[in-house]
Length: 280
Image 1 (cartoon, helix red, strand yellow):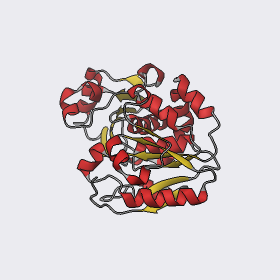
Image 2 (cartoon, helix red, strand yellow; image 1 turned 120 degrees about the vertical axis):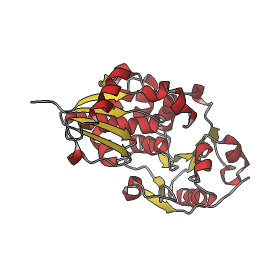
Image 3 (cartoon, one colour; image 1 turned 30 degrees about the vertical axis):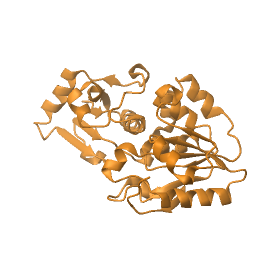
Image 4 (cartoon, one colour; image 1 turned 135 degrees about the vertical axis):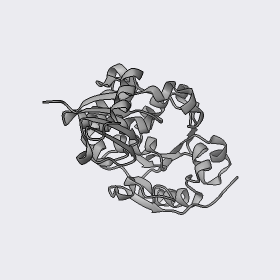
């Protein structure tokens, strides 16, 4: 019997990469012949119009076939024959629509996929010594990570505001014993100027931990509690690093201008917020 083939486009930062790999793993388990296309990271034209990112994981450790440019072109060429091909793009996919030649070009931020593939992701990430160490470490009681993402989100009108962080800090300080917090951010100037974070124990930015997303992510696993931003990077850190006794707070809605799958994720505490323009 002819084996169905899937080309999954890998793009974006580490958080998006892990969700895309979750889909790859699901497809492989379901019997697809899976190829991953990593040409996004070599395409200068694409990088001009997107936030600069790097492929954070070693492709040899992912256990999928790497599509050459010619293989990727072949997949796209087969899309001309609609009866045997399918192209899915965006945030949601439908496996009932798949055919023999399939392209998945999106972010697939789906917690069901994540739950299905969580052990696969842990195994891949455990090739990083620091990840395995931080994942298995016992967090300090009361330790809380706050994630603040702004940079590109400011231009997209998706950045979280003071209301969210103020309510989240108030809730955490009242409900977490021995509460203290560290901040991880891509906008250290904004955090330093914001009085809400004046009591932060430590503040880390994009240059901390040798500027490595993997090392930063590993460090984020070492906390007991999480106040995340509307970023897959912090969502995954809380999802993987959180323990049964962790207090995890997330924004609702995830984005102010469109629905998102994470809005339906009810295992954590939601803080309702609305977008406001705030500058310091």
